[in-house]
Image (tube, rainbow, N blue to C red; front, side, top):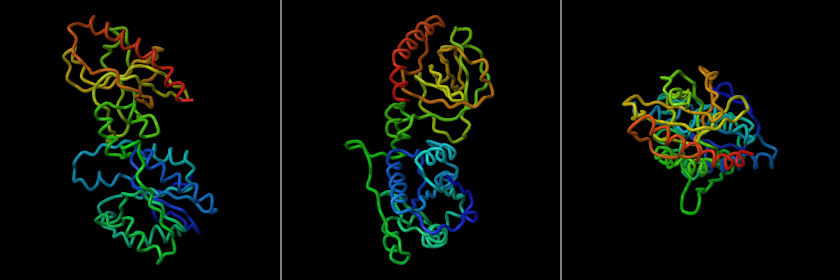
Length: 315
């Protein structure tokens, strides 16, 4: 997949089938749009194109309010390549660009650079200044520029429509297994392993503390999770704790993972991908370290019973 991060770097392409959107999470609804782009482009011997934005428009337009994201741009590009997209344009998004009227962006970028024979968008997508570039706008302009427009209806499971906002809510509430189903990929993020207090070693449950590599990364709610980490091409399973470790009177929020093979010493300063498979329980304060260890034994036993399910799903 060819990736361009500046509009001026994109060569003029003779015929394309394209879509445009932020695609945070690239969930099943987004995937349906991208799949149609890729399959349609192949059918008409055209180039499949995704136009997306970085940073996410809401992080620029919300005037300092925190807006947590489901994925970083590298993860998005990785998944788009796996899906078979030929070209992705990552438009640098700032307040100046946000003032670009939809007609100008359509003429100079979507048509001027990509010559689309078909534009495929989601039912709720809008672009351009004041978000005026919706499906109705694209339909009205289609005759002027000679493209066909396809608007993909909402995609969901029974009465639930897949959406990035719903996914954020699920993850913040700890429903990571359901969120991963809606995403179509297991929720997690790249993280750097850092040194912690060493308390896990004292409990005979050594842990690797980790912090997200991406500052705006959405985090699951505090609690204990069955999790896994990738190290090269190897999956290692374990338990992750997100919280303040109240049994020891601590107040700082930390994230740590105990790997069932015990391997943590060689991970410091390395980048790992941590995936959250399911939430086991709330974080709680125990009356003693011994009581905490008793619970950790139970947590581990439960997790070990569940691992085979995820190993089979990962095949």
